[in-house]
Amino acid sequence: MTWQHSLTAERECRNYLFRAKPTRTLAEESLLVTKRKQLAELLKQQNSSNASSAKSSDGISFYVGCGVIGTLLILRFFIMARICKRKKYLKKYGKSGGY
Image (cartoon, rainbow, N blue to C red; front, side, top):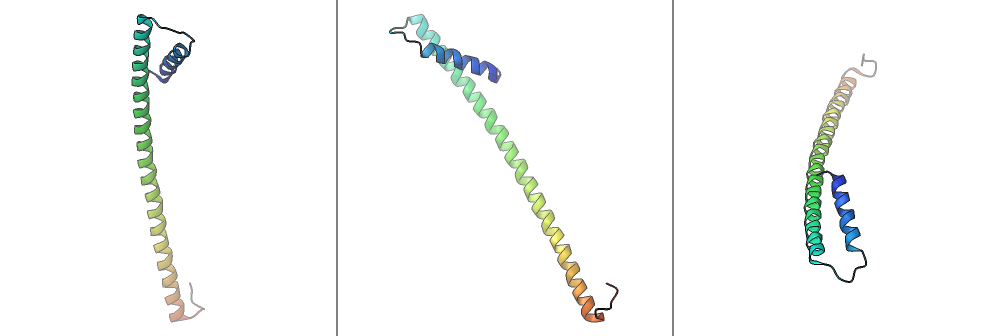
């Protein structure tokens, strides 16, 4: 069932529950119990599908974040190595060097 079916079932159940009736017949009670069970099953399915999709996106964002941070650290390492190399070259050959 889709989420539209679950909303329809929920509305039917809610409308049925909040009617002002002093007593209910046996058939109405059994229908109400059936509707409650259906609604509980639909909500359970909807919650489980939402939890699994959220868990999946959390894992993806974690790996993407780690990749970005790793790339930035490697880039910083290369920049620092180049700066260090430049300082050594300037110290050895002076400021008139080709660098």
